[in-house]
Image (cartoon, rainbow, N blue to C red; front, side, top):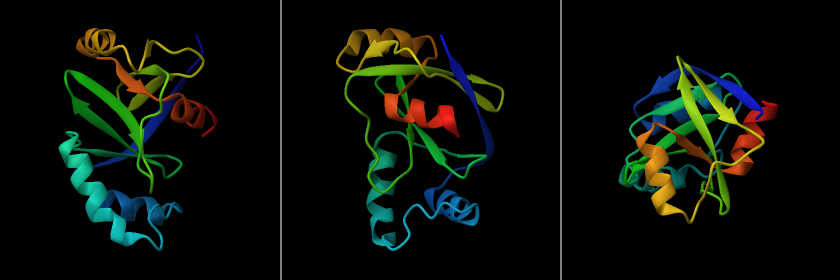
Length: 135
């Protein structure tokens, strides 16, 4: 199984600081669409997001926590979790080790996701896993 380590350079407890840090790193996530920030913030709060993670490349990641599960996602104007097979990730210090070539559970397998979630597995959509592999 191929994996990639993604280094986290900074952590933020609010979306506004994370967006500003990303912009300073050259990633203007909501440039021209700042009116979408309050709605994104409300949705993320309802999903249990309490921390935003800035990567070396200026990408902002977050972990939604619900129903004994954690789902890693990328902060973007149109963030969503993809259908299909989800990849797995685990923390290694301040780095996330993400499986990039093999999924661990299908999105529709709620029981399987819960069981893996209890083991500390963080789920990652295939497109984000592929993006992290090249950044």
